[in-house]
Image (cartoon, rainbow, N blue to C red; front, side):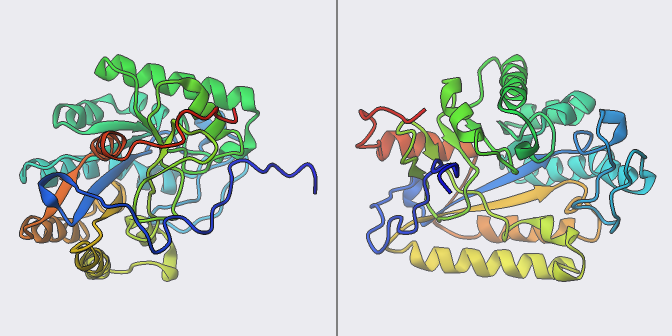
Length: 312
């Protein structure tokens, strides 16, 4: 077992019963961030040089076809890029709200029009890998090259390098590569808290938890997931209500993951619209971008261990 990597370090304790005294803007009880996963066109496909077709998170339940295309899942993904993104942009823009784009680099290249509309609407960009693949299948050099392409892409689109990164399926090298890049304030490849926290391995790197439960990806999990929009709305509302109650004394954070090919369908978009309206009817909620949360945390909760050397 000596060859098993010990970094990233596991932490089963976290803040425990002594969370930090958080003060969000506007004295909000909950900071709510929506992440739009921009993946369509960056998924597995032999046209992208892959050895198989995609099989994940779509409205068709299929097995990968080795060495062949699957037109059904390709078309299901295309619904998100052709139609779903525009419904999402409208839902946020009509309410004066902004979200975060989890940007798969190749998807951004393949569909620059909807991406530009999101940038123009004030959405921030968080790279989600250059491809929507399992990064544990790549060499460290291959992953580093993809990371460099993502950084350059965001800088070309916005004039600034990205502050955050979310691989989704990270390797044991991902966080080290993110810390080495030098431009990242935070990494989102954690699911283990309701508040940000500083990496124990890389003191200058903030970890901003993502969520797979308050996430429309559960529409793409067959019978084990959501079947109708009301289930998604109910789960989001129940999650928020609990965090809002706790936030009276200990403010929290909530992330909602969205996929245009899933929530962007006409029978589901209403759940998002209703939840946005519900949030806006509350008095102490901060609906914000992911980089807003990271900057606020870094300014108000600096890492006391930041002077220590990172284990890069």
